[in-house]
Image 1 (cartoon, rainbow, N blue to C red):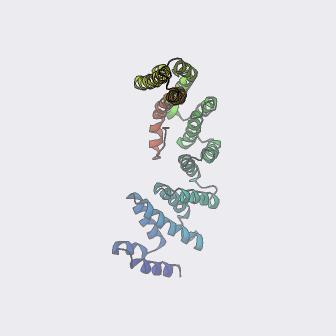
Image 2 (image 1 turned 90 degrees about the vertical axis):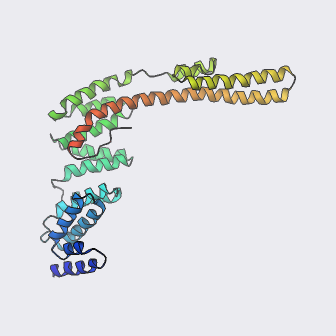
Image 3 (image 1 turned 60 degrees about the vertical axis):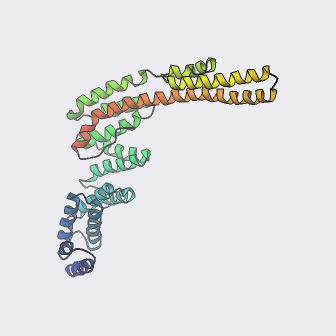
Length: 305
């Protein structure tokens, strides 16, 4: 009966598929799995996910006895959905794997991949939960180390959480990561001591002399524009009142007041952007030290901001 179902399914699919594809469906579930593996190998992750999905659906309906690779099929379904950028579907598939096979050998890498998917989607809270669960397994493998690195990376991106990041880094015991982790720890110590600019200094300098705050930020062109524009408006205001054109003088004065305030705000805002960029550059250099370890597992990590 089981074989008959697969033959009927294959016949139906043959009407819309090429002959070589039909051949794969006229066989057993093992042939479908093999075909899905071939699609995965060729980088056709969307179709691979479809075929793994068929295999998993059959296994869940008819039992694992006729589908001996159901556990692996669930994992590969989730991975291929992730590779095809079907994030919601991938997360659901990983969750189903965990519910169906809670002691599966694929659980650690599934947790890491779920963390990455959540992290890229901006759901850092959900990502931290998966990374922490993997870290709590106290694995001494690359997977356990990478979970700690991701937790440290998230903490490093939040000013004030450097000590949390250091704690995660110190918990990495994988010998292959010993030297890069030591270097990152050293760089992390220097993170608060980078040559940041003071927003108050920039604002006060600009208030005293428009453009001076921008010079403080090494932005000479912006400084020149600020100085000239404010100077011209102030000169126009003074000249208008001196010639008795009080209406024009008042209008130019109000315009200059807004422009002057905006110049001060600009210098303060640019200072914060300068400091943020400086911090992110340092973090990117630190992330570059950890990138090779991610590549060793075939995982596309993001270590930049």
